[in-house]
Image 1 (cartoon, one colour):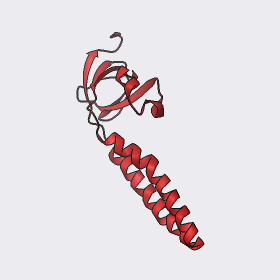
Image 2 (cartoon, rainbow, N blue to C red; image 1 turned 30 degrees about the vertical axis):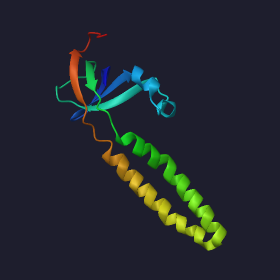
Image 3 (cartoon, rainbow, N blue to C red; image 1 turned 90 degrees about the vertical axis):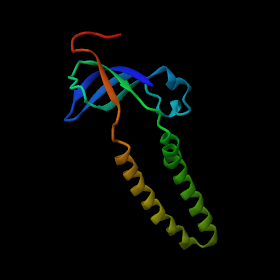
Image 4 (cartoon, helix red, strand yellow; image 1 turned 90 degrees about the horizontal axis):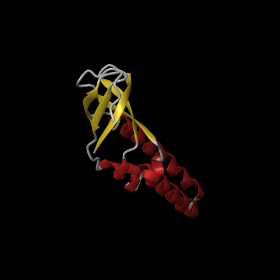
Length: 133
């Protein structure tokens, strides 16, 4: 998928691009979750784009998105159900859910760090000051 947007911030090796939500997001199963009209995408600045430049970004299909959504939403529900079941067996067994919850949070933090890496390629449409459609 390709989206166009304006560079709003230049970092060391990346740029932050503000763009409208692509039309293909309307049919996405996750569209109700993100529910954003505008997106900010961080991409590698391979072409030395500057603030104000209009760029085109190629977004590869990410097959891991469904896994991440499942992990973020279903694992806590599973931990809750398991702790409720353990509560029915012995009340003190409920505390076994605490290490599971801690492991969930640690792995969630690791996932956030690893999936924040940007590998999107950009193509400059027009330099700062010109408006590209």
